[in-house]
Image 1 (tube, rainbow, N blue to C red):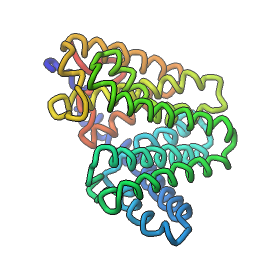
Image 2: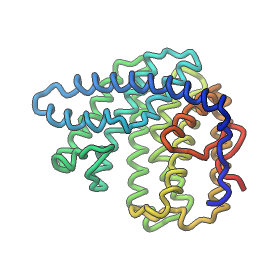
Image 3: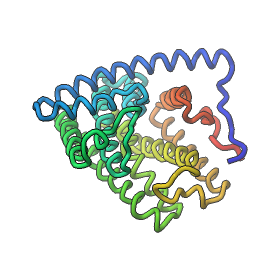
Length: 301
């Protein structure tokens, strides 16, 4: 795509600010890793599970994991004065749901390496990997039973899992036969938006703005998928990447539309700074390098 707009954060003051922000997020990430490790150790207490849990640990706790979905609830807690420990628990829940889905993804795609380590299906068998993915997902739901508002939280979790699976089915079975923009947006919304909805939604579980928070997370996930698929348009062999088909102008229009809605919802929720903080953090990992501040758009016409 031509005319990609760069982010206006290149002055020394801005870079120093980014460094400080990223350092704070890295501390949150370390705490999340510690809590993930403790949870995984506690959940696999039967001797027959130990070998699987140990193998899963290497992937789950890989330094390559960015923890976007689990960091967001904690940043929101800090910005909105929500209970931080509760939001850490939400983050752990979402991260483990995400990892459970990745175990199943690796089986579907026959991937042998994940985050620099052998996948569970690469180390054991497909059937064993599916079982451990199922076990981890059930363990997460069991963990959530102890939350305040547990019924509401679990209802949202189950809805997200169903949406994620539906999105994967559309990706695997529908997109190759029907590679339309409408189907693509439906797939991206369900597949990637489902867990991002929880990341921004769960901190607002007792707030009247929960619907707006869920929508904000959903659109963040959609933007995340759009950006990744645009970058991978010449590599994707799993389904017909829509960016081979639609015009550059259509891509620009789609991005502008959803990015504008995303930022407006962030303002309503008073988490615009959190979103920008997360974007700067992602940039430090080489992702979203052209994403601007809230005053601009990703692609410049």
